[in-house]
Length: 285
Image (cartoon, rainbow, N blue to C red; front, side):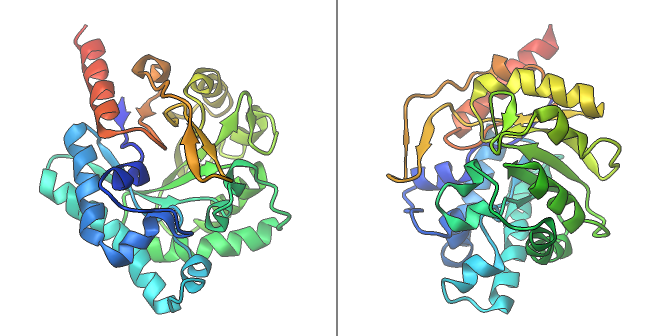
């Protein structure tokens, strides 16, 4: 099993940063990049093999709304990869950097990534994702994380957006039960990646831990590819109140079927350390 990191924004908040604005953790790419390095390093030292960059909510449109010029946004997108790579250098060893391409809904900062169905065409979404994918690819990540994808149309757009960039990727949906957040069957959702040699793994993230197992079975059956899972802690995001509610249900055994595993929102370095310990214990037996 390859271990991913946990919730980068959660760790940055724990370090005292207010991420309540529309740019979320991407704001620190401009304001405090050293803190992003420190957060990545913390997850690496907890046992993560892969760092997912702070570009999830970074986009030309989102930064423009905050007064950034396109050239400045390009610098910040490239910086997201450079910061994760710097953390890797500090820790050493064989580790990877995955450039995050989050869904269009993330820049709306209203929970739309948990609903999908934006009323936008695949062509428009492809252009949106292509603009930042090109810049991220220039920075030399090991792969793309096409993550928290709420519906099939956006998955198709993301796959088109990375075409010809020479960077492989994983494709990860956010789900509820046995369907995407937009309500589509997971077998149909995963099938868009079947036979696509650019996609190294398929699976789920930013979902309830209990939904992982059944989803991975479908993903493996449909695509024959390695499967990836990095669920939330089990707490629930209240978009109106902009806070998490409930308690953590993140347990290593719920990720036992994954080839690549980690955590998303509210999953801390200590959770990744427990996952590493469980993985090594199982391997030892």
